Image (cartoon, rainbow, N blue to C red; front, side, top):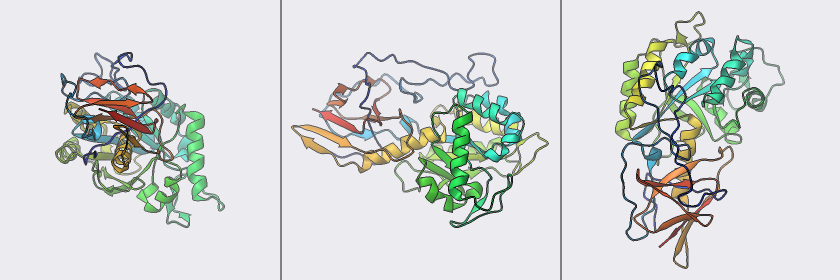
Length: 372
């Protein structure tokens, strides 16, 4: 039995409910107030395990021959889009309410030497409560060539400071001040690729600053992920066209925003708030694009690759796939999979079929079994 290319799967072994006992809730994503908010789009409906529900429904449970395990790329959506904001800039703080009103989960990469800015820690703690991700952008935002740090943009760097200090002290600040359960991704200052090596020892993924898209079954380096970096006075129309390209190719697009205008603190590459929120709202309005944080989408994408690499073992007619999660992997993540028939199970519990066309497999479990 093989796993089809472009799909992936995983499982959870702990605290799995008996089939039919889980309460399939739907909860709004950040910013969805249900009425009168800045966005007129309906709330994004979430499945019971924290993934957004894709379009479609009324798909009958497969009753064919057991086999053809496949993971749905991008959780069953055509593509994935993540919006990231670098540095913890004053303009992000000033426009946070407008960003939040879009209902899009976001990743804010903060440089913690900027913690003296007004409302810095209060804003990012609120962002965590609102369901967004705070990522590591180091303490002083320095160039790194693999040997030395230089050209820092935020605060003074002591001569004895190492790249490990820059990363770990930023993580400590996030963990100590924002109430986030962990720090799972970082963004390399200036997009310097040398940050990839120390990031690999600490995080699930590292975002770079070069242009590109990420395929579900491709060979993109997860410690130097590409993005679309907004340029001066970029537009909602251009953001929309980038989203359309990702949709057409079935890929993951990461946006990178620096300064948001209007602001008196223009740090780099200013873009008007209406264009930023317009691009975000456009992605949501498509209905078939997964709008997720970098940590959430990366966890799914990495899980897909793990399953594709897992060699199945067959014992007494049961087929089992096993995997080991890498360092920095966030807990409680799931993959959506399908088969032609048979019963999928984890930790002895049969998985429940969802009428949108999949089973949800817990990654924490490290194994999945198909029984004829």
